[in-house]
Length: 202
Image (cartoon, rainbow, N blue to C red):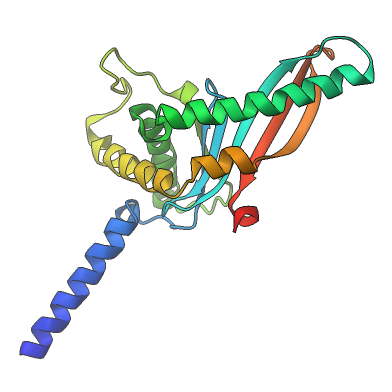
């Protein structure tokens, strides 16, 4: 009897530890599912798994191209690197990934994952949500959040905290590399994406 009780306690503790390390475990979705949070207004994109592992961080900048010769594009690219690092630093300094906005973005991804699971969908595409889908009131609360989704929002907040804990923002700022750079807007603007990858960092 004593051995059985100890075994049950151990099993219960194991379950609790698993749930605490994976805030989305109760949703019944794959912990390895990839999700993307686009902070379009900040120029930041964070990719992570639903169990809180970060896979990449991107800083997307737009720099004016002054002139029409080849050196003008090269000059814009040099300026874009500094701008990308400033964006990352500002994003980290204001703790944007653990904000109410971030939780709302992640909750959209969690709701989509849960809906796909319930419908039996086998969608293997990444979950993607943007700050442009979220509208906060003057108190910082998501005006589109429904009462029944409060638990999902709570899970999203916990997941945001976990992902942020797994990100070394200084390493991201210092280790980003240019992923893509291309002139847009009839050659007047350079779009540059700087990327930090967990695989490259490890």
